[in-house]
Length: 84
Figure 1 (cartoon, rainbow, N blue to C red):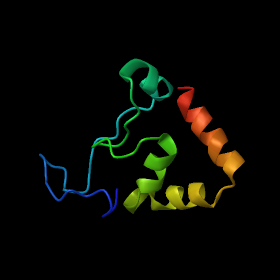
Figure 2 (cartoon, one colour; figure 1 turned 90 degrees about the horizontal axis):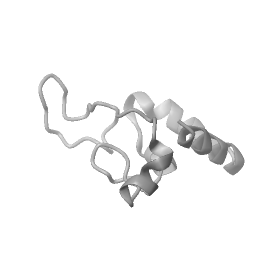
Figure 3 (cartoon, helix red, strand yellow; figure 1 turned 90 degrees about the vertical axis):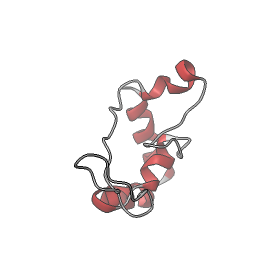
Figure 4 (spheres, rainbow, N blue to C red; figure 1 turned 30 degrees about the vertical axis):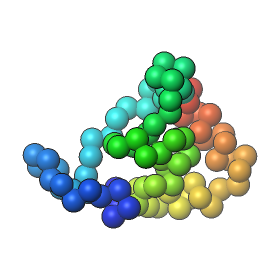
């Protein structure tokens, strides 16, 4: 996930910069069900867009494409993810 998200603590076979990615289904209901919207392994992202922008490492290419997209395309992608 890149150095921006690394905590440096290995757990099992995962290095300090690897995590299990939680499924996206239900992400559009996070605020309704939990009363908050915290994303990523440690809750540092408050929106799906912010979570995408935190990625590096293997996700860097997708992050860069998302960042380069215009606002309408970014909003459309987030709405799509929230529909799961």
